[in-house]
Image (tube, rainbow, N blue to C red):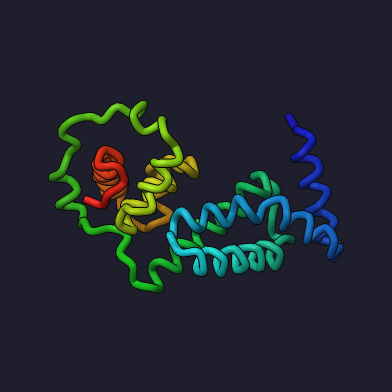
Length: 186
């Protein structure tokens, strides 16, 4: 089942493959804001997010002929953006995890946190997410905001699923603490 925007995007992709500069610009305009926001949520740095945005589009446009349309263009571009963001974090030596598998196996979520608490006050939650340590922020953003499951996140971050689940659990608890304290870092 194709929707009108999917058809329009497919036509733009085809025009880009044929070297149409206006199509490149339209495709960029369609996706730039969303990709910038994705990178910014992960990196928490506007300059780095801008760099990742440009690199992601450059990579996408360079490899457009390899884009087999198995997924939507936006999904493919988002994956490039996320991977570029994670790679930049690694390059800058910002830790994405503080746990090895043994520690992760030993830590289980003691008390479940009702996810409905996380659904309200999105503006405050997004602000609180920015206060999280890098590893926590990355896992929360990839799962809650980008829609990746724990298996996909473990592949992207190159860590075990147990580590991802533990980081996610701890990130949710820390996020809840920040929200309850009114955004003051705890």
